[in-house]
Length: 342
Image (cartoon, rainbow, N blue to C red):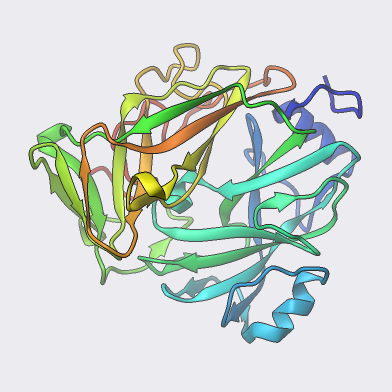
């Protein structure tokens, strides 16, 4: 099935995304990469054009580049590789451009590897009223707000920091599942990792290229509890396995802060087949990027820290998550793909 205006509400699978590319609804400055289309999402790539800005913003009724002129400190050329400093905010133009047909909307999220190194990213569109959401019929360029929080990062044209999920209409929410945190310990009693404050630069295109001990402090078992310190960044794992049916996709969303002074810092997409027997991923955990708010908070084993919201696809994808290899299928507690095994 390819998308049409009469398509039942649902998330578009890879074959529909590829049809949109072939039909010119999604274009790019350069040729698309062979692995850029995921089972139910499209990876987006940085161009060579960026700006260091003094403040985040929404464009309102204006174009993004018109608003950038109000807050830009200087332009940044990414063509030779460039270090985005932690604590700074940047806007980058993406290589991809959309011309969405009637009936299609889109939503963006950080890639899992981006969230796991504490880089806050949000999609911007011309005249966009909300971050990460693309309105029906949008015809224009895409931009990315990038704010490294714990580590400075090295990026270049083609670096993929976020991904786009396309939807026909408003898909129904099929199910919402609570996600608890595992503080009972894994190998050698390690329950998580805390980012080091004064680490080096993470090369976002260098897979297995960093010694994790230079960037992370392992956290060991402490009677099923973990004290979250304000301003610190933690990598933890879910207490239960996560499974995404082959005809569905899911998004991890934060819980209401009224039930805990912490949050899962980055929502994330889970593609169809994640954690399933069919895709050889049984036993996969969800990895959680956690921050507290302004006060220390004592987190307990099994405490609910996020929710998974499931939505249908318009049809089964022609390939599932993890087919052909994946860094995160069958994962337990795991750092991003940039780091060698602990």
